[in-house]
Length: 493
Image (tube, rainbow, N blue to C red):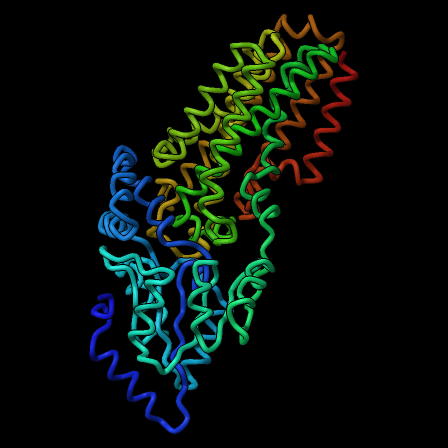
């Protein structure tokens, strides 16, 4: 019988509470989606996948033996930092008040006991814990059986967040629903007369858009650069460039989802990244796992149906490289920034393949040095954040805070190398073929020197809090510099 799961000590304590003149019924609290806005099973699944990717085949084998077995196997192989989990602040505050009133608060969860006990210890809110134990998955009717055996008929209140909690709300004296879904509230109303709703303000569309990082799609405007720099103005080729833009954007968003799913724990200790939907628990992990391959299919379908084979091959290489970057390359010092610079340059090269125009080696060299400098800007900004937080012993992507001066030297040097390439291009024979007044382009070179130097000064001051590419598209002065360069190019033609 499942009643054996509840100890006699627990039963005795509840009987003593019930003997009081004005008994206060115990409050049982769900964990996943209630106490925290995330789900421990999915969190541990991602942690296992990140730590043991080649052992992913074991997961369906464990699941075939039951959810309790799966949870226990995962719990034995991974650790989670329960201090950084996205706790529901409204529920935490409510439980603190109930505990101060002298009410017994008990955690009742389908999460494996390893994590449930750690969370109970961290929150200091619960007198007891009911959880899955490797044999029984404590959810739905099984959770109800355990609670009823524990309370021995004195009644209880229950806080939950999903349809699986309907039997518990039906049996509870008071049902407390944590949800943003009016549909779930209506279902709960059919099972209980007395209920309280903790409404969660959560827009799935808004959070999904943020997780897809649609604002990062501006980086893929680099695909239009070869067409523009070749001075080709063809509607058909422009349509091809637009298709390439969306193909790359869908592919990039797929990688962003994968990256955010794998970086949940590290994002939660970052001052800005902790607000990302998966880290904050405002977007469900299963939705991200489902959306990532769908976006990838859409990306490669566009490339397969409408664009040249060379573009498709480069798109595949881009995905493979970014996936490797998400898993391990971003933790390898120097190689990480080289890969980042290469990914930006790859966009330009892919844009050339999409519209079938030759790509200038001058352009590739200029873009490589420019984006290498900007990649160092990103690492420099992360190190500055660590120093401001007094985390001098920590690392940012493998870089120590002691590396700040090195990064601050190599980064600007890469930017000035790009300026040198631009100067050599202006004096080359190639420029005469495209421009009638090539000497005017020296003004564009000065504009670039001003812009790259300003970027680094802002980074040095700690004002570069965004990705430098995104910063550029949000910076008014960068737009002014860009407009000035555009006018210079028109004059030089």
